[in-house]
Image (tube, rainbow, N blue to C red; front, side, top):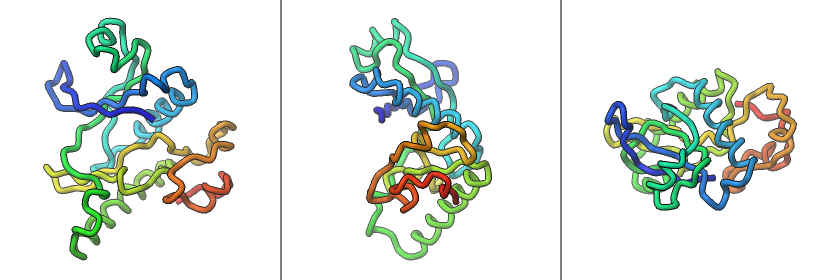
Length: 181
């Protein structure tokens, strides 16, 4: 959906990750809506196993000019906690059973937190599970396709989105009433 950059927060000097709608997709209302949906979904969640949303906004003219075209004016952005380390793709086949068990339990705990707040991730895959090299914890990210249980958004209900290899049967078949933990 977009590109992610490492940046430094101007007020706190904290290293953050900035997710930005790619220039080629900027004109798509659907992509902007998905990023705003991600912000709303992640704002509900406060868990050590879920990447924290810090801020959101749109790129101004001065920032667009300073970015040498990488961030067009009016682009939507999301600032979130920066997680140093690998994702599960990088670790597949490299972990012993104890590490796999710990990773799965932490991931299930993060998902239970999201589900308890009626948020279904809908794009759970190894590349969206980060392994924080600082804390050693699992961090779930990319809630761009998240579904709020009970949502009345007709477009969201109709859309069959996700990564096919990792999608649940009800998601592939568009049975949105069956979305759930």
